Figure 1 (cartoon, rainbow, N blue to C red):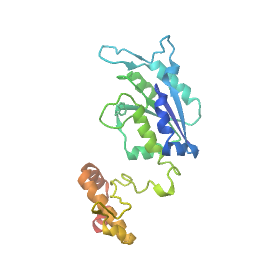
Figure 2 (cartoon, rainbow, N blue to C red; figure 1 turned 120 degrees about the vertical axis):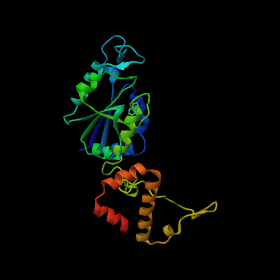
Figure 3 (cartoon, rainbow, N blue to C red; figure 1 turned 135 degrees about the horizontal axis):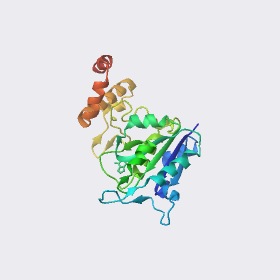
Figure 4 (cartoon, helix red, strand yellow; figure 1 turned 90 degrees about the vertical axis):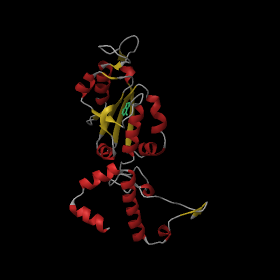
Length: 244
Ligand code: ADE
């Protein structure tokens, strides 16, 4: 069964270039994922097709109203019997990471709500109980780009999405380490050469060098990841790490 991704947005046209290119496109062609875009505005009921209104209590900006989003979520969920994990993109959400991508890639169906304007009427969150997700501590003009970030990182994890040549297993973050340096031809470029070990043909030594590089880089560049990894490791792992 493929993963169904529903996207509720005011700007469905923003998604076409991403979903229609590269791995997200190929995954859909292979039947691993289906994308269903719904324009929230098509659920507006007044003459102005409103989806937002001024905040009670005053203040700048506009707030997404309840009715259009409740109606949209209920109508879209009825289109398929698979239960949907509801996700709402907001800078106030839980920080998205590789672990969350892996969990979401195992779901049968995801429903992403991408809002615009200052925010959502809080009753949307209380009533629809979505998982609120943030892609980082910065504010974008809407949830569309964050939804695309989620989709791209989730879809490439679906079994069969990547070719044999580009497997996801040994990538950055797969085991809490960032990637080792990579080189390709030529062996020498403007006086810069490729480390000898990579030309040695000794696969065991190469694997050991790469692991060492990943550890060094993680310690130097991402002490936060290194710290998490050390505290999550058992003594056995630590011993194995020390001896490898
Ligand atoms: N909407 C606006 N900014 C966002 C962010 N950083 N993450 C998720 N959704 C957002």
